[in-house]
Image 1 (cartoon, rainbow, N blue to C red):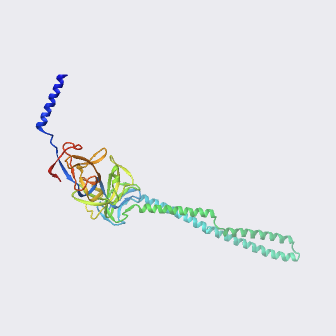
Image 2: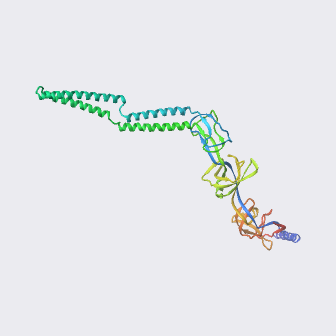
Length: 407
C-alpha cells in the first residue's frame, strides 16, 4: 500500500511539473460574424410542366373511319376550322331511316285529323243522296195514297206502312250523315302525335351525328396535339386534338404533400428549363391544390401559376424547374445559417462575453433562405456570433476570436 501511494504521488509531481513547464491549455481560435440586416427569402424548389392557360380538348362525336386531317401540330386555326372528317356513311343511313319514320308518323296524324278517306267520304255522300231519292219517292207515294184514302179508295193502313218506311230511310240517312261528320278518335290522334315527336327527336339526333362527322375547332387557337390520323377508326368521345387558345400559359407545379402549407396565393415563382439554360420566367400562384394526387412515387398537390409577361419558348408539356418564394423579410437582422444551431430545447447561437468566454444564447428565428436566417430576438444587431469550430464549444469555455475573423 505504501508503495502504491508513492507511485501516485510521483505521478502527481510529474504532471504538476509538466503543467508548470507548459502552462495552461491555449484558448481555441474561432471565427465570428455579426448580426447584420439583409433581405431574407424562403424558397421552395420543385418541378412542374407548362400548359396553355386557355386550352381545349376536341373529341369525336361520331363513330367511323377518319377520312381527312387537314391540319398539323403547330397550326394556328380559327373557330369552326375543320380538324378532321369522319366517314359519315352510317350516320347518313340512320338519318334517312329516321326521316322516313317521321314522314310516316306525320301522314298518320294528317289522316286522323282529316277524318274519312276521300273515297269513303264520296261513297257516303252517294248513299245519302240515294236514300234521299228513295225518301222523295215514298213521299210522293204517300201523297197519292193519302188522296185515295180521303176518297175511301184505299185503306188507311197503307199510309201507316208508308210512314214507317219513310222513317226508316230517314234514320238510315241520319246515321250516314253522322258517320260523314264524325271527329277522329282523341286517343288515336294523341298517340299519332306522340309518334311524330319521337320521330322528330330521332331525326335531330341523326342530324347531330351527321354533323359530328366533321370535327371543328371550338375557338381560335394553336394546335399542340393531334391524336388521330387518316384511316384510323374513332369512336364517339375519342380525343381528336388539343388546342391552346390565346397567348397566356401557366405552370402546373407539383408540391410534395408536407410542403403544401408553405405556398400562398399570389406567391412569386421563378421558372427555368433545361431546354433554355440561359433563360428564366416568373409566374404568380393563381390556384392552390384541391386534392392530393399520386405522381410516380410522390404524393403531391398541383398548384397553378400564371406566367407573367412574355412566355416565348414555354410550350405546352415542357418540363420546368420551379423556385417559389414562400416567405420574405426585407432588411431584417440576420445570420448565416451555419451560425444558428439546434438542440433539444430549440435554436441557439454561441456568443462571447467580455472575458472571452463562450456563451450559449437562445435565439428566436424567422424566415429562412438558402444561406441566411432572420433573427427576431436573443441577440442584438451588430453583435458578434461565433461560427462552429473544428471542435465543439462548451458553455464558459475560453475562446480566442481570431483578429479580423469577425465579419
